[in-house]
Amino acid sequence: MIDKLYKDYYNKLLWYCISLSRSNTSIAEDIVQETFMRALENAHILNDLTESQCCSWLYRTAKNIFIDKVRRMANEPMIEEPLFKEDDLSKILVSQLCARLPEKERALFWMRYIEGYTSTELGEMFNLPSSTIRSRLSSARKKMSKIYFMQKGKGD
Image (cartoon, rainbow, N blue to C red; front, side, top):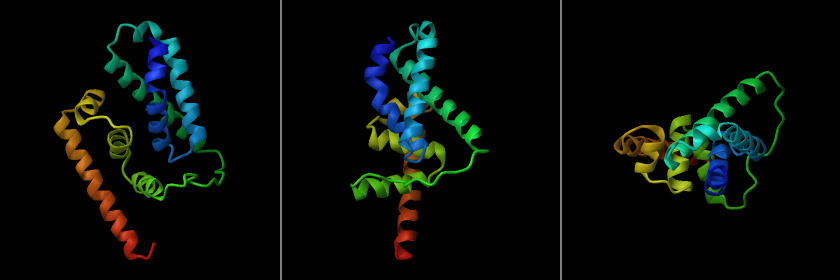
């Protein structure tokens, strides 16, 4: 089961962690690795779950690991790294705008529009009605649009 989860969800989970870590691929890779290590430790639990429940477990575990890592890093000195390395300006712009969203909306937006999950699938993952997911996505799009036009007005 863990092999299948790894093959099916590694890249998706990595993108989710990249969005959580504001494009810090090193941290994202560490989180994904730790997530799958915990999955191996809890294989007896995951084997009894459906695939969508396992997916939810992976995302929830990755988020918890991220939160723990942020708490530990709060007392460490910050090292300046370039925020973006991609050449695709539109993806950079979307990433920058997405990073300014609240965490829940950022995760939903990324999973819906970058990873391609449907609102129904996201609803199952987050235990929310798909209408709530669509509403939050609409809110995220409006916020991103507002941020974009505010920045554009400043000459950015």
